[in-house]
Picture 1: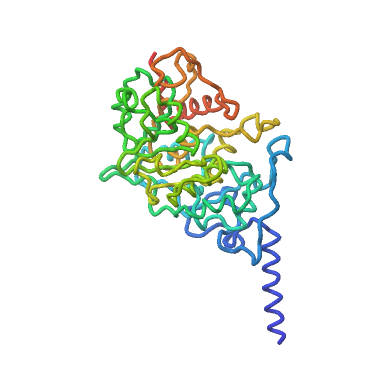
Picture 2: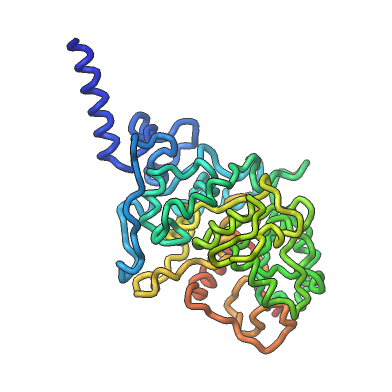
Length: 402
């Protein structure tokens, strides 16, 4: 009897300890760092709760609202992120990999996390995870959102069965062209160079027809939001836009920037016309021109998005009343997606120091338009970051012709 009482006391104390530490994982409690992974410094490992060990009866915390904060709120777990067991880059024998440069550069080696959790899918957001991520505004978390509204779409997303990028046969390194839409590409004649890479990433409008000489014609990875893929159809018709890239075997990556993206997922996976919300009347799968496939569709994780903001693009505007709308551009998130997965990254069409020489977009064919600095992005910060990564030989940034 005494042994049974002692056993129950030990179990109760264990539950209390796990509850008190809140965001510490079981493996960290027992082993200090997760097993089976490279020994990074402890501060780089997530202290978020495991996705499968919710206490019985755990429910969503009350909805936290952005309007209650006059600037970006700060939590003691702001810079803690969910991680996977292994790094995401699939090649290990590339002697010239950008990751070797990152690991040898004091300015960068403490910022990057090779195994940051990159994708979100059914089963990856437990109630504990929901409650943690509810402290962050979208797209970095679920502030303002109702649990049921988000999970209705998110629970349909399949766990990726393979990496986003696989090494090409006989190639020790993965080379990637990351193509944004800046006017610097107009008459650049960089199309063949772009298409010579193992993988070509594109974002938003991603027009290629009629611009092949400058931007190439291949798309292997298309990064988008529900807004960018729908708005492009409406705003780019005058440039002969015929739809989002739909190359055979293309992989799609969604940035879940708001509730409308989770609504989008519901219609996309169920093949149902949406009957409410921002895209009422839309049929999401039609925007992928027959190339939507559950096994080739990826949704970026909120921790990955927050990691990019916190460690590389933390704008001063986050300290103002406008903080909730500020986030990295889709192009910036595409860049960091490539940096996590590729050995060599060449960037085209991104904002450069001499951006005033060029039109806003390459498909404007050199029109006298100015780059629009939208209030929800910090373009100056991104411009400085791309130049710095270029100077550090992490990326090769196309700077335009002399």
